Each structure stands twice: as structure tokens, then as C-alpha cells.
Length: 451
Image (cartoon, rainbow, N blue to C red; front, side, top):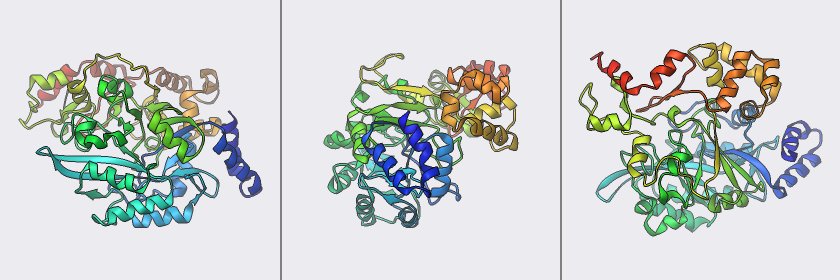
């Protein structure tokens, strides 16, 4: 509660009372606080990312979302790092702040493409560093191995073990987090190019891996089915390619620790101070189920097995999704929860709820934006609306149907037509759509009837 008041006061008092602003920031360092973070984002210099991404827009929409810590994204890119250094001021605890005090943590993502054990590997990693100096050192090391100017998420041909050698050689507090570990094409456990275990990928250097990003298409409960993952802390971030509120913070990690890089690093390493995560429904992710998007064929793992992982419409191999891959590696039944597991909350973005209740086709429609800002102006930020505001308060501002949609979301009662082969899942508000989503085999047969 103390932190919430401090966070509200900082933007107001920055110009009028800089002394008070510095005091507030000092308090945040020494008092354990609830930190709602998104530490896997991108800049406008990454491929397929919005050209409007800027520090100002990131701060604006992070505040609207209800986040109070962001990764910088893409610090290895020469143009983006210039902007970071011009817009952010680093404190003595590894946190960088805007002029209004909003905090960022140095973060980037890199892509490694190499061959190991006779198989091509493509794996993405989130890298966190304890400040600008170590970020520059990491960038310098990468610059010796390839170009950095063509993409905010650069690609290199060295293996995962060498990445650990590089980061450990710079600082023991540099954190490497395998990104969206189940994604078929670029995840550590991905069906296309991944490994079966962390140890198979890193060998003896796996002792330097402390946390795994579960990705949009899985949630912690799915990961709990694999006993070999019990020793790793599970985190969730958005991997946003734009700052819009249905992307930024759609998944987030909650820390209950001091507001310093060292405290956050320690929480990721030990789990102490890591409170849990905010997730979307895994069905919402682009690779939850199996399928072939070109033929509009979506299949459950059992259906895929029946068809030998071949698209029954065109005869080409299907993309094996996250659920299938988890079931392949799982050694425990559904419902297992390890003793050290952290709690998580499942929420669909507010814009999706508004879109569904209104029955419109576009998240970007004026009607959706109008209602979104109606709620934000009343209650402050999206996470407060999704997680905390009582129904009666919601109904004072919006319609009963909209309030009902928000509460149903909070209670995890909204069904999602599952995503597959690069297609996002779709939250369902029409009863006919809900019935169809409960019968994937029938949906498959209807799809095939078109061929």
C-alpha cells in the first residue's frame, strides 16, 4: 500500500519537489514492495515491432497497464542504446529511471542458431545485466562475434554454453533466462529445434540457469508436470512487439523484494522475493495446440497422433504445439503442484474483454478504446480493474454486461478457442462459439469437409 501511494505521487511532484522525489525513490530501495514487472520487451529496432515504440510510450502504457517495472529491451542495438542513455538516468542500484521516476532494468534478447547433437537448434534468450556498464560489456563481446545493427534481437552462431561463458565473464549478476521455452521454433524445449532438458542444452553450465520463461502458450501448471523443472523459477513476461495494452504486460512477474537490481536478481535466482506471475490462458497463445494454419486445421495432441502428425487436408507435417510437447516430456499427471511452486493468476487483457462484450471485430476500434479509457479514467490502471475492483464499483461506471465480463475473467470463466501454428487464440463470448470450442474433433471434421 505504501508503494502504491509513492508511485502515484512521483509523477506529480517531480518538477515541483525534486527532493521529495529522491526521497520516494530511496524508500523504494529499502522497503520490500510489490513489483509488477515485464522484463521481456522489444524496441522499434527489432524485426516485426511497432515503429512507435519509444521510452515515452513504454512508460505511458506501462502506467496505464499497472506495471511498475519494465525491461529496456534490445540494449545491444546501437541506436536504441543511445536513446536509453539519453532518456534514462541510472541509480547506484542498477535501476534506470525516466525524468518522472519510472523504473527500467537493462534487458535484451538474443537468438542463437547452431547445431548440437546432430540437430539444428534455434533458441532465444533474455539477458538481464546489473546496469549500463555491464550491458555495454556484453554488447562489446557480441560485437566480436557478429553484427548488432540490423536487428534489436540479433542472431549469432555460437552455442548456449558460450553464452554462459560470456555473461559469467562479465558479471556473476548477469542473468540468462531461456525465453518462451516451449515455442516450437525458438524455445529451449520447442518441438522443432529444442532440447528435452536444460542439462542437455547447457551441460555443466546449467548451474547458471535459475529461471525459465514459460511463454504465452503455457502456464506454470503445465510446467509443473515435469519434475526436472522443479529447481527452476518460472517467470512470465509479454515479449511485446508493441506497447498497446493488449500486448505490454499481458504476462508479468510479481516480485516482493527491495527495488534494486540485486534484490530482483536474487529473487530470480533463489525464488525468495519472487511472489508469482500473471498469465493469460495458455489457449490464448499462438502455439498452444497442434495444426496447420494454411489449411485452418487445428488438432489436439490425440488427434495429431491419430493422423501421424500430418495435416489431413494437404499431407504436409503439422506444427506440434506446446500442449503436445509438454505431454511428451511430462512425468507427472495434471494437477501436480511442487512444494516450491509460486501462485499465478490467469487474466485475459481488458481490451479483449471489451471487444468480446461489444461483439466487435477489432481491438483497435473506437468503441473499444472509448470504453477502455472510460474504465481507466475511473480506476487508474488495467490490472486494478482486472484484479481488484468490486462488481458494484464497476457497475457504477460501466454496463452490467461489461462488469460481468470483467468478473468472469477474474474467475477464469471465459473460454478461449485455442491458438495453433502461429494463430492467436480467440476469447469466446457467444454461446455457439463456446460450444464449438469444447468440441475440437468436430471442428476438425468441419474444416476437413471443405477440402
